Image (cartoon, rainbow, N blue to C red):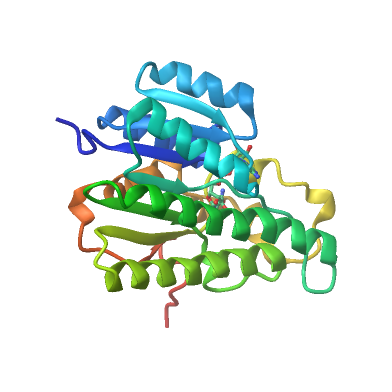
Length: 255
Ligand SMILES: NC(=O)c1ccc[n+]([C@@H]2O[C@H](COP(=O)([O-])OP(=O)(O)OC[C@H]3O[C@@H](n4cnc5c(N)ncnc54)[C@H](O)[C@@H]3O)[C@@H](O)[C@H]2O)c1
């Protein structure tokens, strides 16, 4: 028996990076997994690797109709939804002085609105099941605030607040549904490797030029997937509304 046997999980942004690793690990632990992404080709490829226990659905997390479609496709194929990993997001440079309203709104629409929609439709579907777990990918940027990523930091702080509100609601309603957020520092994924350095507008990312800092800062996708697995499983059934930092102590200080 795997740690997620009998559970059905939706993972957004599962074509790449952390979401891909989440899907592979959760399937290995016995879950049936629905992988969603804008990137159809890569998403279908990951689902193919997993086999019959996986379904890929094209999905823009900022689109409400797409969410309805993803939940329906999951229920039709696997009978319900027990776990939702709100993972897909975008990242772009921009300080408070260089971020345009257009960039700000684009990032909030995906990273914040998209997570609200996920919680809304995920929760609704989970109410029909014995228990549920919503896992929201935030960032240390959502706790500390990063100068180089103004809109992203705000969107990730919104995710943390949303998580706490959903958790409190589920507790008050006596739903057996939990909602927690994960706050990593850097993770070695295309999100950071493909970041457009030409747009760099601040000095916050100088640390990535130092190899020692790189080693201390960058988790592997598996390091995050292990935490997602724990929060998805019943092993964490009394953890609700938590903000789990996975940052190798980045927000601590030595004195
Ligand atoms: N990589 C890091 O350093 C880091 C650090 C902290 C937090 N995070 C968070 O971890 C999560 C996963 O990031 P990653 O590093 O694996 O990124 P990634 O860029 O490798 O993967 C993100 C995936 O989301 C998809 N996506 C983007 N916009 C979408 C949309 N509107 N609808 C559906 N899919 C969409 C992309 O196609 C991509 O496949 C994100 O929430 C990110 O903010 C990442």
